[in-house]
Image (tube, rainbow, N blue to C red; front, side, top):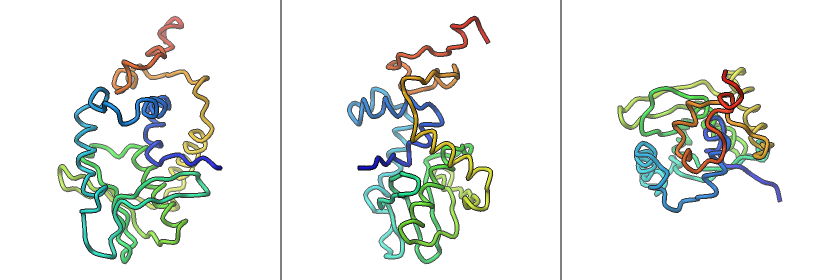
Length: 193
């Protein structure tokens, strides 16, 4: 049986590969212990999609499972307008479009295409301020598409035992910081930067 990783792991992997491990270790138990308020707000904002209450229109797919054999990824899409070929990823609040966000949207697009849908346009929607952020399709941004493929490849072959965190700033803001057994910043333990 082949292993498919969750699309959401792409964002987590970029932040810190160990966060995927810790999320799996702690699962959905006691989320309040390690989720911060922003993450809980974001999860609540997705409820309409997850419960498929966003739209009743038959040409709007919402919260459906998708997968890609080519990239060994699986997950759910937020909203896909079949007639327009428009894929929308909803976020509670967008200050910046991070690579992880973009890679998740690329993965959703590629999964939809692989299962037979035509995707013409991809975008983000920020519900807090009602803003839409259009982004290029993967094939129209070759540099980012290659970066997506490299990140996915690295994630698929990640070795947890050999990983050493390199960003003290990320470690300080990690929701799993209190549970992690890795040093905050290895460079600090090796005589400084």
